[in-house]
Length: 237
Image (tube, rainbow, N blue to C red; front, side, top):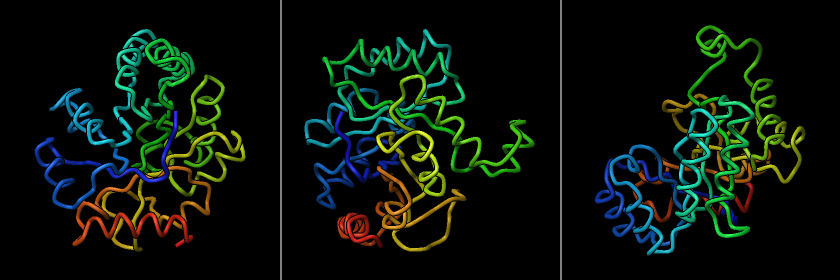
């Protein structure tokens, strides 16, 4: 499935608010990410409404369950004809393979969404990973190991921080997608994500796809901010 370079995170509680934001700021047709908050309230209707306005869609639900359940869920989600869907890499190889199987079974031939796995959440630091999850070592090492498991089991890429993207590419190949949140248009406060970067820095450090939320949605002029992000991607800033 085709992918775009920058997805706007529609982190709104309702479609009414998201739709108004899109209308008010003339953002019709831009690639968007729909996450749990809005999907669990609005259901598939939000996807249908976005598709009516030609928005490419990244559906970020981070499935994590036994392989059969994930396979069946992905078979249903595949029918929505979105660009990308997510799972948790920590679900393991069999679950990742099941997710891919479901997407292939539920999609039009050759048109299944890209299957992207979350390695470790970008809100997590090494102390939490070591002490709370009981996973030893450094974050970057674990991310790269998980990425390798994803690739081996048919995943198309991972969600990772910009600071891991280049090494993921080195391990998994240039065609393996790196999707990076934590993007800021300028070097601003880090909010709740501890690993952040600008669009140009991200591109130059191995990111294929950026997810940008607050830097656009909370900007004084969101359309200009979106255009700035695209410009930064292309100009390396």
